[in-house]
Structure formats: structure tokens, C-alpha cells
Length: 238
Image (cartoon, rainbow, N blue to C red):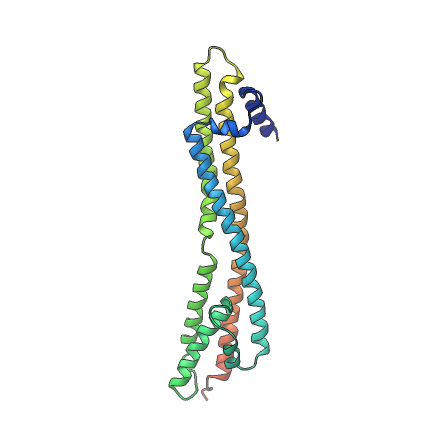
């Protein structure tokens, strides 16, 4: 809060009456403008990813709950297979479809018995990895924004301080009007870097936690499906 009031005081001190923050930004140095534009791009893209990822994970979690309910209530895998398709069923449904296709291929080539449970497990694992990679898509941008934005803002801060010292050295007398523009640019760059980094860091960790929980759900489902296959599609060796 102190920094904010200090920034406002500097802006008011070096701006003529009736000017605004927009005027200060318009008259900023080219480097400061470049830093702010870059941070704005990082922030806008990050918020677009945040909203889209939030909706995606919400739908994925809902579809996972619905599929698990159907899976536990449906005694026949073939009937469950007919109820879902890869385009609308969600990650769990797509993992199940991939596993069931492998099961069906092994059964059709033999005597109605799954010859290799390990093969089914590998198919399920591969499908799970593909789904997790899809869920993690674009999270790299949030991590990059969280890590890079403060340093970009710091670069703008350094440039603003340099401009402030240049104004002081060129002034006939030491006054706040001589250093105010550079210091104001420096503080704005710092604030912009923090404003871009903090939401990206918060939501990156939040999404990563939700994806981790979904990954655990997929792994548990794969194990449940493998147990079901061993009970019903593999003959016991006596």
C-alpha cells in the first residue's frame, strides 16, 4: 500500500494537472513499453488458459464420476462398451475403450480367453499416459509465466531506475520531478510482473493438483479393470 501511494505521488509530481496514468504509459520509454506489452501478452494468454483449463477439468471430473458409476453398475463390459465412444466419453471412457479393444482382439483370436493380461495392462497404461499428457497441455505456459514474469518486470524496474538517474544527472537542481518518471516506470514494471506471475503460479499448482487426483483415479480404474479381466477372461491354471 505504501508503494502504491508513493507511485501515485511520483506520477502526480511529474505530470501536469489533468494528466493520467495512461499519459504516463504513453510517454514511457520504448523499453518500458516493450516490457509492459510483453507482460500483458503473458497475462492475457495465461488467463485464457486458466479459464479453458478450469472448464476442461470440471467436465473431465464430471465425466469420470459418471463413468465410474456406470462401470460399477454394468455387469457386462460389452454392454458398457456400446454405451460410450472415444469422442464424447471422457478420459476414463477412452481408457476403457482402448483396453476393451485389446481384450476383444485377444478373445476373437483364441478360445474366448485373454492370453496376456500384461498386454492389456500395457494398453491401459499407454492410454492413461496419453490422457494425462492431454490434461497437462498448456500448463507449461503457466509455469513459464510464473517463473519469467517477475524477472521481466525486474528488467523494466532496472531500466526505470537508470532513466531516473539520467534525469537526475541532467537536471539543474535535484528535485522529485527529475526522477519521478523513471521511478514511476520502474514501479509499474514491478507491479505488472507480479500481477502476471501470481495468478499463473496459483492456478498452475491448483491444476496440477487436480490432474494428479485424476491420474490416480485413472490408475485405480485400470487396476480394477485388470482384476475384472483376470476373474472373468483368464482360466485358472490348476
